[in-house]
Length: 322
Ligand code: FDA
Image (cartoon, rainbow, N blue to C red; front, top):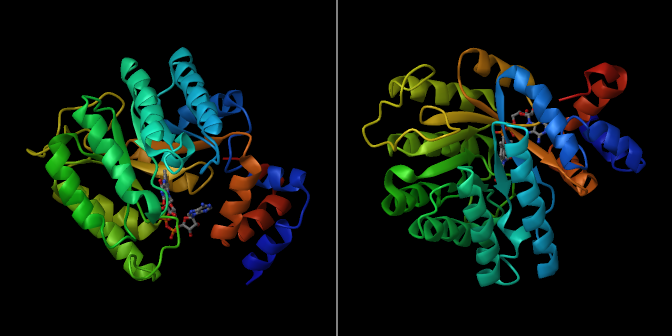
């Protein structure tokens, strides 16, 4: 209750206040801000994936902006020698305006990234584009671009079938981020209770690992992390081991031994640092961009527990950093 009240109050505060609160979750408004944050977090043994803030667009000109900005990001990663890859939203590249042109834009970025041996992750948006997003990955692999993968959302009923289908198409090159899914989807296509979503996410992580895929375990939920560690242990996967799965792909640049843990900037740092200390590869999702305000407001609305973080930031301002 208290948390929800604080969130409601924060949403009515001036922009500068939201900016101050969000500095924990958003690297800043410029690429230089993102580089600065990553350079600092390198000391915590983290690697990164960068997200230029912004989602569904209304004109293809906006898609050009994202394409150009991501090329700048890519060049900056190379220039600063940062262990990082890219996370993109297909709708920001025009998928819902002109599917063919959207695909062309994404292909162009993935092709340029391939020249640097850099991976591109297609974030998964809401159910309107689930099939299309998976299809883009399959088509790019068919064209020989294997430095691309997508995200599967545990909450969707279809996810175990998607793992089987993608496995048929990509075999050992399948590479997913598996998360619960942030979009509140209707109950005819998705689990809606907390317990069911957690169980379905665990099932998806287990299935993808069993099928030999590379798996980015993207959760801050301790039971999901514990379940993943237990599953890795059963598969004899873990820090210091080469991936022992006979159905897995070859080792890949910038990747862990068949899996990695992924977390959002500013969320559950102690858990991430603990996993890193145990030797697990940990990747931080780094959002930055001019759209920081919209992103921050959405996060506040989606996750009312942030209210307590806001209160803490106010009472202990020195603690309000990623
Ligand atoms: P849960 O929601 O139970 O959170 C566990 C605890 O973590 C909470 O109690 C809270 O303390 C903390 N927490 C979680 N999220 C927080 C937040 N945003 N701010 C502050 N605290 C938070 N989804 C999607 O649909 N498509 C995608 O492409 C991605 N990509 C993605 C990348 C990465 C690296 C991560 C970690 C997550 C995503 N997600 C996503 C979001 C994901 O689907 C999910 O909504 C969130 O991770 C929250 O789910 P948890 O498993 O963390 O559990």
